[in-house]
Image (cartoon, rainbow, N blue to C red; front, side, top):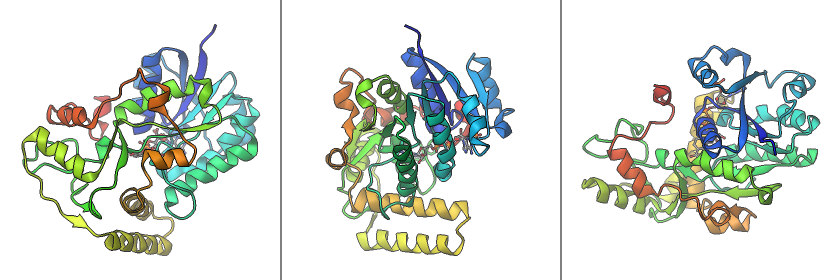
Length: 326
Ligand SMILES: NC(=O)c1ccc[n+]([C@@H]2O[C@H](COP(=O)([O-])OP(=O)(O)OC[C@H]3O[C@@H](n4cnc5c(N)ncnc54)[C@H](OP(=O)(O)O)[C@@H]3O)[C@@H](O)[C@H]2O)c1
C-alpha cells in the first residue's frame, strides 16, 4: 500500500518543526510542506528542501481555486500556523474540502479550554473548527496542554537562562495547586504522527500529555533536580483576573497591535490554566476529547523530570530562537 501524503503548513515554526520531525520519524507518510511565497528564500526552507522534503508554495490568502490546485494528491493536511494567524486558516480549510482531502488537522495544539469568552485564542481556533464542521470536512483536533519549554521558572544560578525567557513563570498563580496538562514540545510531533495515522481519531478531538503537574510540583521538581532553592511568589486569583481585564482593555484601544494581542492570550492562559483549572484530563474528557496516552500506550513521552535533567544538561532549545537550525 502506498504511503499517505501529508502536507504540513507551518513547518518552519515551533510546533510545525516538531510535527515534521515526528512525521518523518514515524516513517509511514510521504511528507511535504506548504510555504508562503514570501518565505521561500528563508534558510530554514532551503535546509528542509535540501533534506529532500518537497516544498509546495502558496499564499493561503489567495483565491480558493488556486489553493485547490496546490493541494492535489494530498491525503492529510496539517496546519501549525502562528497563534496570531488562526483565522487565516478559513480559506485553506475550504480549499481542503474542495480538494477532497481525507483529513484536516486545524491549528489547535494548545491547552484545554471551553469556547466562549474564556480565551480569545481558543475562540479564534473554535471559529476555524466550526467552519470545518459546517463544511462537513473530515478533521482531527489535537491539543497538547502547555509546553514544558514555557513552564519553567529561571534558576537563581542562571544555569537554565539559555533556554528560558526572562521573567517567565517567576510567579505562581492562586495557591499554585491547579493541575495542568503539560507536554514536551519535542514530543508533540511524535503524538501527531500516531494520531493522524489512526482511523479512531477521525472527526474526534484528542489531547496529548507528558505530565500532569501543578505549578508547585513544577517548582519542586526543578528544585530537586537542580539542588537550588526557588523563591515562591504567589499571585492571587483576583490579580490574575485583573490582569485579564487590563490586557483586554489595552487590546480594545489598539486592536491591531500584535504584542497587545499576545498580552491578552498570555493573561487569559493564566486565568484558564490556573484559576479556572480548565487544562486537565478530567475536563478534556468531559469536553469529549480522547486521551492519546490511552490510544498509544506503547509511546512513552518525556516526563517533566526528564525534561528538567535535559535542561540542566543544556540539551533544550529555547523556543523561538534560531538555534533549531544551527
Ligand atoms: N501549547 C503550547 O504551549 C503552545 C505554545 C506556543 C504556541 N502554541 C500553539 O501552537 C500553534 C503554532 O504556533 P507556534 O508558536 O508553534 O508557531 P510559530 O513558531 O510562530 O510558527 C508559525 C508558522 O506558521 C507559518 N505562517 C504564519 N503565518 C502564515 C501565513 N499567513 N501563511 C503561511 N504560513 C504562515 C510560519 O511560516 P513563515 O516561516 O512563513 O513565517 C511558521 O512556519 C499555535 O496555534 C499556538 O496557539 C501552543
